[in-house]
Length: 256
Length: 247
Image (cartoon, rainbow over all chains, first blue to last red; front, side, top):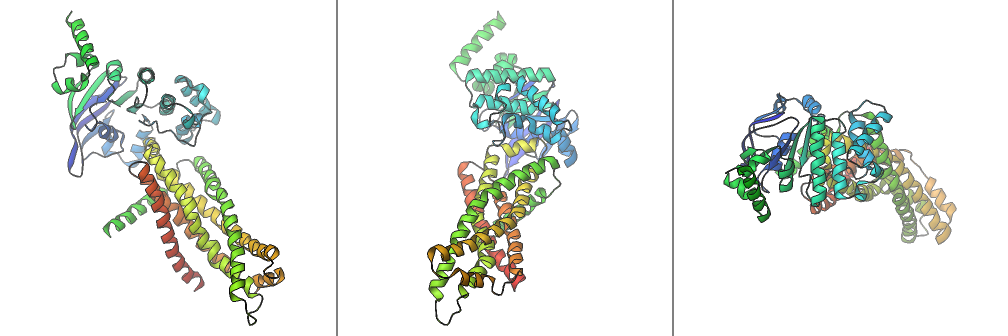
């Protein structure tokens, strides 16, 4: 479980995050949504420690990340896995070497065991046949799956995904979403997904927080979205005709 | 001025992070060997080519420009050797390498930064500066003495080639001049200078690449800035080191 208590972050005097309080629960896919520029990427970067908030507390299972020393932070980072918007695979390494990288760095297992674990992770994302290819030789969707395999190689407690569906077609996005959700349940991880893909919101949003202009505007589950009266949330989620119609049908179902 | 001081401060901070004990020695040596191949071995071709032709051209130029009945015949070989040993194979060769290797390092690290590969290392709890930059610095510092030595030999062979194939003077006279009043310290001086230059090339280029913010335009700019800055620092360091070592 990750708890945020009164988190503030500013750049050159401008507040980008304002008093964020929320809890991301264990074994659930927690979504951070919001318009471009609302501060959700900054929030994610603060949570993973790439940026340091000015004020507030950030608790990883009651361990205050912001009060930790370098050594403790380093140890905690080994419990984290992250999937970046651009996949961030190492270009000079094969797919298998990419997945093996965290194992080579931190595991004391033998080479055979490390290879076995990496192959297992690749198999989990259905990419065993691409193990000898380089990132440049595979599609964007496959790169994201390799990134997932690399992120789970060390059995992390916390999984962070920064816009994992960015640049992918709807079908591949669905595959990635389902994979992340299944892995979250399988390993009972605390998963945070930063997205503005409405299909992800409707599909895997077990807990959603909506960031608007740097503050938490709304939180709830994907089912709560349809009955929410928050105007800003409705304007954002149901901006298209398609989703307005989906809402009408869902509301009728709930009322009926 | 303040911006320059801030840049120096950030460079020192980065070097502080770079010179730490590697996370895994196994991974460090793997990276180190890769970098030796990429930065050192891959530079041998250009070093040999440039040194060979410069050695030949220096011989021809000296011969044409100082030819006089009053000038001993060994002068051409003597001057060629001194130019190659004292300046070309150490300083000028490192300026050339600042272009080749420096831009390579800056663009590689810059691309890694903008594609979030460096962030990925940090998230894993890896000291990315140490993992990425230290092997490059070590590889450059350990391969540069070999490159300097190869450059000296290639220059001398180029000088002989100018005699044999150009027919501009007798190879025996050239050989006598090359051996005339030979001072071994000049070789060591050149190698010592090159070690400092290797550090400048690798660390300064790494700094510019590692600290890139933005996209491909910024990566290109960082690559150019790294070459310019490394070159200026090499010239400045050359002045000081020459005074200290030879003065």
